[in-house]
Length: 356
Image (cartoon, rainbow, N blue to C red; front, side, top):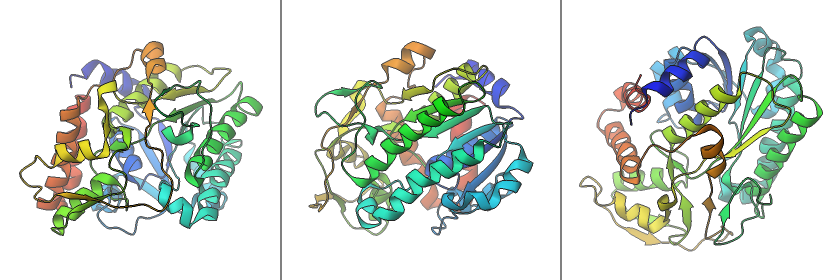
């Protein structure tokens, strides 16, 4: 994980930059916020407050270092003056309804958040002249999934379930704003990544949080789709891809959107069951798993190609699967041992990865 050269490049770009992050209270958002804070950025978050106190964003240390405006993305207009006063130079849009199963239950809210939330945000951005780089975090599920084939940026967009449909719409809308309004004055980076694991995820029905919470309750974990193949990757590799991309391409305005997949190496495409089996070799995890039938549709195979980002900016995922699992396991093990110190432990993991 030697990353000193990259860190110098990132710090030179992000140091003292004013960065607005929507969805900064969530798993990805909190990790991105902490990393940018360590690089010397001034971060302003806009997000719903997490009810689950285990989230990093509810940690006292996080609240001291990362200022957050609490609000729903569809109401961001109400805070326009506060955001304008901050004069953000970079926008990272992470706020979304992120769960496939929930999109079947709260379908209208899913579409309002992921589609109209993005529209309202980009409308606000029209009046934010300081913003030059916009990162839109969509999903690997934006594609019309062709089973057993690798998905590249040229693959057709689609989305059968409400979540996937809303994320592919978000992708198209963001590209439309670039073409229609931001062609000469703002960059848009559309990042398609998914199946991210690592410390700080407490979202219900997500595989790794379910594993550790099941272990804490001494109950076997239920696998809803055990043979599904997914491109598992650690949050730090995803962050590294984003930071490298923006620091390389964000210095001048491009006429077109920068659209990239960020995925793992090919041998990281494991089934749900295979990934859990590796975790369960750890001594502290004393449970097993059982399968559970689901009443909604999920794709069985999802393989993401990262050839484009590898070729264009010479980025490579740095972590091997055993390192990805160890970093994730260590975070949750430390959380349950001493949750008061988990912010410091998160900083320590980030510093080691980025060689800060």
